Image (tube, rainbow, N blue to C red; front, side, top):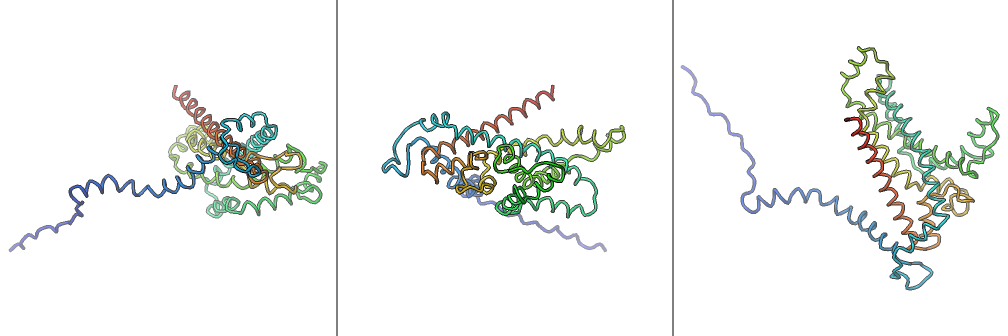
Length: 321
């Protein structure tokens, strides 16, 4: 005699609240989840940005009582165009940025390509390339100041072994740019290498197998497969590195051996825009003019990012054709 069939157990589903409360839960709860981020951004990001923009349109100075609300319009920005120290800081920022960003990303791309292969201790090597990034910028810069010392620095000692005379790395313009760019490159190369490595691991391995069957060398595979597949990631690192280079502050400030660390050397040879803005705020207490320098730096960052995005779109459109 067959056993009686048993009913399948019911799976209880969690019912959504009905009526107005249910509609409110579906429509409002997603905004509540993301509200903390926008609240923090509004308080610590958007408000300081807008307030700095307002201050940049005033003649507020600490040594002039009652100047907080003195409206001067675009006068501070007009003065920027005529200020030789601002032009010098802009030139230094762009120069150090190019010397730091281009080698940094090229080395990071090659390092990521090597780490993508099967190596012994690969995990340890991947962790090792990130160590410079987690090190304090103050500690790293102070160590590099000793390495680039004129009389007893290790760099000059190595160059002297090849017959090169001692270089005063802090006195010259190009030499100080090179030293500071080396610090930035050492700190951020590993970070960008791990970003490239993560992108490389998402490239289908079948593409490399097909290229190898066609007789393509490792270099040809890297140039024809890896780099085109990493183009969005490369664009991201270029934008982030550009923003970081235009905001460079800690390295040139600690690299200076002058009494005023914001001067960027005896002849302002490595004073960046961030240092110049800081010196106007807290060195001369010209709040309105210092805010104008900060906003000019912000507009420059926006312009550089827009140029990068436009160049990427045109390149993508040219490839589609």
